[in-house]
Amino acid sequence: MVMSDSRQYRCPAGGIVEDVMDDEHRYQAAVSKDARFDGVFFIAVTSTGIYCRPSCPAIRPKREYMRFYRSAAAAQDAGFRACKRCRPDAAPGSPEWNIRADVVGRAMRLIADGIVDREGIGGLAHRLGYEQRQVRRLVTAELGAGPLALARAQRAQTARVLTETTTLPLSEVAFAAGFSSIRQFNATMLEVFDSTPTGLRDRAARSRNPATPPGVIRLRLPYRPPADLERMFGFLGERAIPGVEEIAGDTYRRTIILPNGPGILSLRPGSLGGPPHVECELHLDDLRDLTAAVQRCRRLLDLDADPAAVTGFFAGDPVLGRLAAACPGRRVPGHVDGEELALRAVLGQQVSVAAARRLGARLVTEYGKPLSRPDGSLTHCFPDAATIAEADPAALPMPRARAVALTGLARALASGEPSLDPGAERDRVTAQLLALPGIGPWTASYIRMRALSDPDAFLPGDSGVLAALTRLGAAPAARAAAAKAAAAMAEAWRPWRSYAVQHLWATLEAPHPVQARHTPTKKQGAVKS
Image (tube, rainbow, N blue to C red; front, side, top):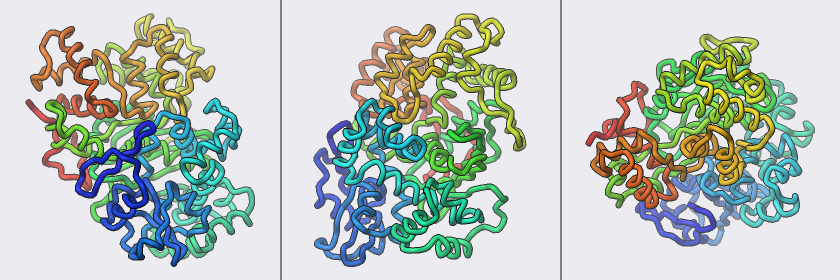
């Protein structure tokens, strides 16, 4: 695990050893088949020419035949092929890239979102505020592969998903995945997966569900267990805006605006048995958006988190230790669209969750973009910032001051400052938000926590946090005194303050009806004092 520029190695027993993780540590993780390191690093075997996850059951070679890489792209660049048994290219993402706020962490979040395929290295460098050569140097020094190689590895994985889960002509798969030619597509798939696209499709066809509707992409989103999916889906369901989102049984569905067009996503806990995963269905107007859609689903559910590291960090805390132990799979709900989350944060100022939903529904009805093909109750995409920026504050169904704050924020977002893309510089965005009228510390921190997936955002003066601490006997009843006590306690919760907020909020929530999978449920309800 990496925080800022320091690295943490978790030993197999679950403790945390602060140190630079060297190859000997990686070897020990491989010997123990520790799945928590899947996606954190990769193991290549020189005698077979194959690279694997650390947990791969097929790895049995001597230490001298092992090589270790920080990314799948680096292993591929060195000439190794992906293992057909453990499928390392489909491992959970490294939690490092959500934690780090430096240029490499920001670059990795942008690359994962598909920015290199859409805008090239020049677009990546522009968003980071660095020269292209400097970006290449920094990323290569850390990952062993440059941005183009990382994007190529991601492109190959996207192509594999489309090849195995759809019946699209392979020529369409190639261009939808971002390849510039059929020849490049065929060569890359053979090099990376030791199979032609036709071979991958034929093998997948034997296990594909024939009931999959045309145009729907079904895939699994892996994560490191445990995961409190019950609370996650309940949290999203309570805030679901009619027309844009819905909870149907144990499935969360919503519309989404992607770089090349709209789409609809469906997420539900994966079936029991096999590696832990969330089942995902995507219906995209433009298949080039697959990479971005998958990454945004992962950020929404915080699927790249490392729950063992967070729970272990809180273990000795007098307030959070018991809460974290009772629910070690607690995660931080993110969002699929940073601008939408920011606008909804303003809608929710000084009102209940239910009232914020009603306001959101009225905004969608008045300003949302209708889907060309509605799907059940999903009829609109949430209005974009440019549309709300043009609205008359007097016509909005909310107090004048909040309407002015909403349209002012929308104008700023439409101009690109602040930018809430995955690679945004979090401190800079916070300062820009606080400079806008009607945006205070709570709103800026809430946006930072959910839109920017910051694991260390704390909401000063949040009524839920203060109520939870008071109920737990950790803060006095008087609001001013409780706020002061909360601020002091939160300093000990860095760099996981977003998770601390979720643990505290959960103590005030009623049990959610959605059933969790892969995680014991008896200990996951709201903790009562």
